[in-house]
Amino acid sequence: MKKKAAVAEQNGKQITNGKTIGIVDLKGCRCRCGHEWLPHGNNEPEGFERPRVCPKCKSANWDRPKRWERK
Image (cartoon, rainbow, N blue to C red; front, side, top):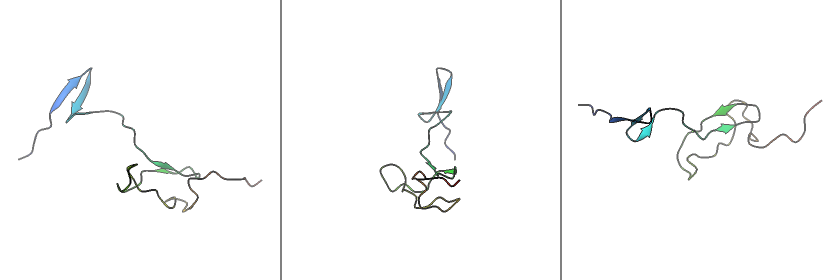
């Protein structure tokens, strides 16, 4: 038997199980190559373990800005 979710309405927004439905802020990572992703795991107090490399370009320096640009 499935439980029915308790749905209420507050100020015109639906609330399901105490959480409002809509836009949520997620903590993710952005590489200097421009790739953005949501890391896996919940080991650290921040909510995720810090990735070692960018999954797209495999750069170990994904979280550091480039020091200089080629001409």
